[in-house]
Amino acid sequence: MKKDITIAAEPRPARGKNEARRLRARMRIPAVVYGAGKESVAISVNPKEIEKILRSSSGVNTIFNLDIQGVETTPAMVVDWQHDPVKSNLLHIDLKRIDLTKRLQVKVPVHTTGDPRGVKEQGGLYEVVSREVEIECLPDEIPEHFSVDVSGLRIGQSLRAGELPLTGSMKLLSPPDLVISHVVTTRGAEEAAAEAAAGEAAAAEPEVVKKGKKEEEESGEKKK
Image 1 (cartoon, rainbow, N blue to C red):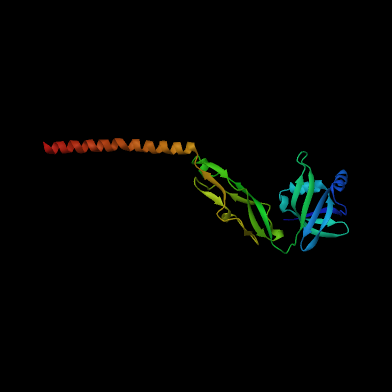
Image 2 (cartoon, one colour):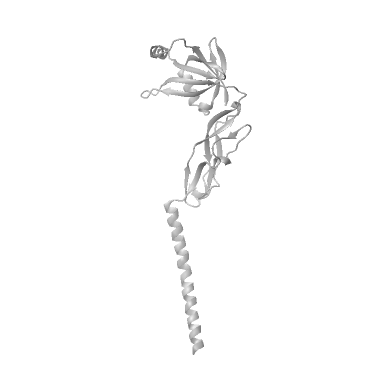
């Protein structure tokens, strides 16, 4: 999704560990931008600005303006990043130029809402199996997420990728039968169903015995 965000970047003529340490001392980190038929450019960016994008509602699917001082201004996305394993701070970023007229392949989160009937009425268990799907669409039409109401699901029913509401230029790339979530039977629900079935059988049994006894009595009277 295209956002009105501009990230300022500076060309980075030198590379290597020493240069990276000098950049971090200035509260910047090394990065590289490539794609759109142009050569890659080594740059440096403010890690705090990148963190804001990664933590936003659209996350890595955010398209922003990358303003490289004295070089170019281009739409871009974060495609890869490296964190410090101990401090968790960003160490390096890979960015990709985006052509707003060409379709992209992206992964989009799926959010479900509502309490399934299979849980409320049947004692089932609601399970989320897949939290995202892959789609293809124009950059300006990348959704932040898909939202689906699952309140109508009963035990044994599921929400599949093919049921997601695609609009505009969106095309589903994940298998249509990919299970997003479903309602399954719990042991408690199975035991309750078994007890109910046993109760019904027990309630029907006296009638059969009584009916058989009556038939025996009628047969005895005829013999007399």
